[in-house]
Length: 196
Length: 196
Image (cartoon, rainbow over all chains, first blue to last red; front, side, top):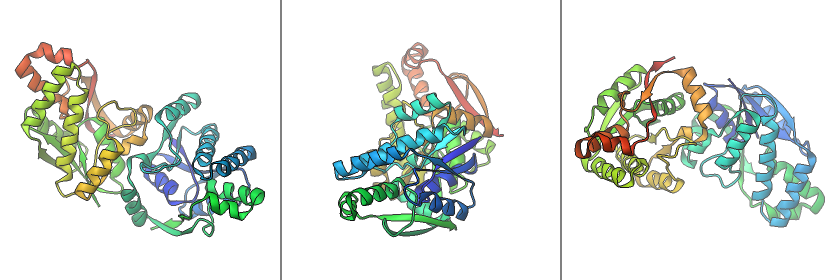
């Protein structure tokens, strides 16, 4: 069986791929509208862990609507959730048997309710997996430490391929950098540099 | 890191162990009050998949109270949930770094809410994992078919080590076999005979 893992180059989506690797032919798939250098950074991270990589296009409209939502809300949660749901639909349409992501038990966003998961499975004839849903923060941190070489730093300095990167780029272009700072709380991002 | 996987000899707990095996030193742990031959059947299944096995005792009172609850309810859900929560506490006290079970995304029972998981982790200083929470029924079935050799049949004919077996034994003894039939809907049980 093959599996497409929605991939940002960060530790969660990479760890999800590693958990599936003994059981599935894994391809790392980066969904991006091309509004930042996401695909480049994701491809580098995929090469660093020696797994096949594919890029799938997201409509630019999806990211721009999510950016508007983030500015209106003043926080990123709903905008990121909306992009992730669109990304899952695009990846599910690629023809893989299985679609997976790096959603964790203790994540606040994105979260995939069971009803959404089952609907995605039924409509696309796939299995949807979220291998980290059964792992808490501590277990994820310990597995990452043991199995991955990870670079971490503030969001704006770690080149990554997550939805936040594209939303930040759109907001910076349309509203200025100050609005980016207002909407995104400062937090540490990670980028995978290889396996341990 | 070592991990104790709550083990019934059935396909779900075995598959959970297989998913963790590349990352943890896995021991299969059967929690039983000794009211049926559970430990014997669980040990056989553990040997069949070539993983270490340990038995941990459950207080007989726990199973008897669960049996009373099942008879009062007329269905097994709450009784099984109560035993599983007690079993997790016992296994968490054994000293392993990690405690896991075979709870699945589409299970109605047992279900471990995130708050219970975090409380278990904090009180015992462990990680709690439910690797199948991120897998739907279809994905579990496909993985089992590919990786395990499984015997299946009606609950009363497949020798197994799950909580249902002990509850059925108590109810049969105290209320008679007719009450067992009334409380437990007929469903197919599985027992693992080996790996594929």
